[in-house]
Image 1: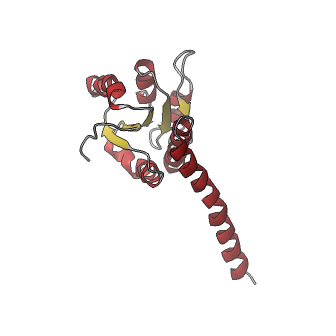
Image 2: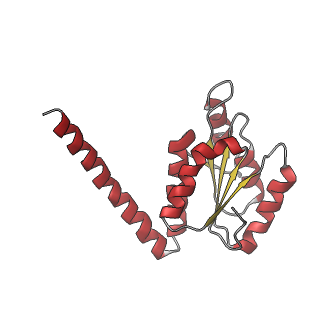
Length: 170
């Protein structure tokens, strides 16, 4: 994916292995019509790249960062320490504690450096997209409508699953 000039959201992943989960975030942001860009940039292995992306964000109109990382999971914290817009952390499965270590590293930030943290893995990736949409919706009525419509559509999804189950056990 080529870098887009102006985007609402930047997704950063500490590793390309995070894409399996984070593709759900990308897909939902696309469905919601929220412009975004995706990068692999490690807080530990490519800290200069991370800081360059964050430094360039204001000129690109970035409103939210979504950071996916596993194990020590410092990416969200590093971004939040340097960015002046909301940062959402998505802990990734893996490591000695299968994602719990990443969850704790992401959520336990010092005062003054908040990282909004969602669940581990694919479910967290989707929730990060929704949360980013809700943040952007505060100042963008078109995004607010699309997020509201998407959430309303979830009622239909659950009701259809309920009906299918009930039909199968008659």
